[in-house]
Length: 100
Image (cartoon, rainbow, N blue to C red; front, top):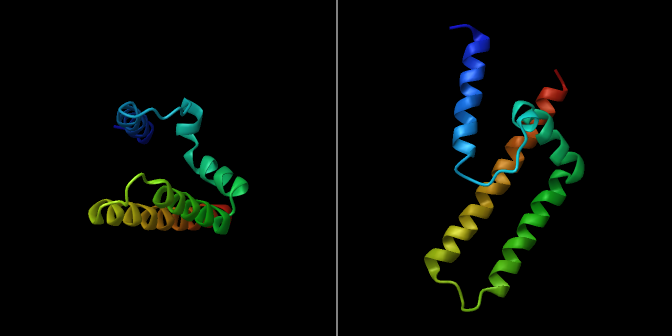
């Protein structure tokens, strides 16, 4: 199987996985995920993206009708921390690709 065939097969698998969720991604965006990550950081510099996510978390805590249960609070805080790590690593990847 050629490299091009493998890439097409990989993209088909990615599209199948994305179809389970409402992604709203075009084929071009899927094919050019690197440039889409760069575009994210153009619109939301890393420090702003992290701050925005933290504001969303604080808003969720504030607007929760009842005080969130311990496990629910722990899960949401873990999710926010993981998203911040994901943004950090995405930023690193986009910078490394720009510098090549």
